[in-house]
Image 1 (cartoon, rainbow, N blue to C red):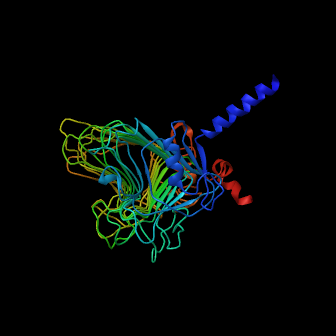
Image 2: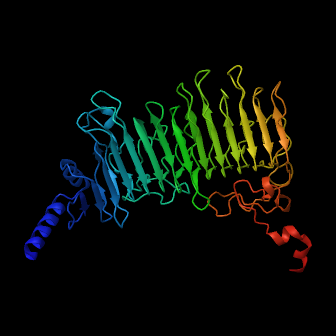
Image 3: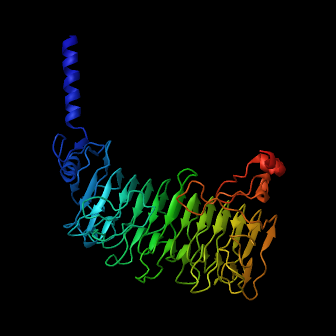
Length: 504
């Protein structure tokens, strides 16, 4: 009897394994399949779930992929390289031309979740895709089923000509001579789609032939969809914008950490090519309905050849997203750190943020921080700064807004509390404020003006925007150290008794 039971147990195990949807891929053989597309076709044809494709060698895999069912594709213990030509043969033209296309159609069977993890995505050296990853399901022949796209530890970048990425961390601009670039954006998400990414690098797609390339475009077709950006993401050295939110009414959550921030840097890397809105870290463009709130934690927007974050709206009455920035830094941008312009309806809140060394472009007058003129009558926006450091680029006196805080919103309530408005030292503002006609002075309480003595203004440094000024010790709200987005590193003995340092 025991033998019979054991026999049926083994038989049932073999049957379950035969229908298992976790399959392996090895390009040289030895796995269940030798190509990703063969593995996807197999799991797609089998009704069992989950559909998981584990890639077990580095490749390279010379494939383009079209996905319209739920699936996980990931590097398993290695970080494989997928080198892609444009997709073709999809149900609509928008699903063609990309390295990876994600969509739903009438035969796909409802909502789908696509999880992409731990691989490198490069364009082919002879025929480049338009984009690295593209989602769309809003055209004839496609369905309105919801797509959820999850990206973890991906690297999307140009091909150095030898099927290797031109960068591994996205922190520096590289010479693209001989490299193959994507023809446009690295990633573009439209349709009925939620998108999340963590530990992903989208970098270095710039120069002739790449159009108005952005690192990531989030462009859902209607309100209520989510973009979630997690720790370790880098959007850098694109021809235009690091990250673009092109639909209002969506929800944006950008949650880096102190040890693993989100970095958006160096965009508009090739200034010889002129594009509208070139060189922005984040660009938000309304489409006519009030937005849900943004929440940004530990996001560093630095070294962009235009501005940090910019909002733009086509018509009066479109809703400005309410934004909360915590522990964020806007540093070394050529023009403006933050530009809040048009239709000031919802609140902007900045807590423990640092603005410094913006307005480096001397060809025109640029502010460290610009609060523009609202165009909606009868509304009052509240814009607040708490425990922030607002420093300048050390330039001389100016009365036209350069190297200062420019406020032109006559109906906005602008307030600064426990905030340093630095007016002397190597990172001083030339003047604290330049106010437009009829604009009331902002409310300032518990302020400091001492030079923060930044340890570093290099956003690749571990001590980025850390301050050492004794004046900042226990000057923040609640008796905390005033440190902006960084740390106070002066040390308690120094603060408690400065003379003690003479004898140490």
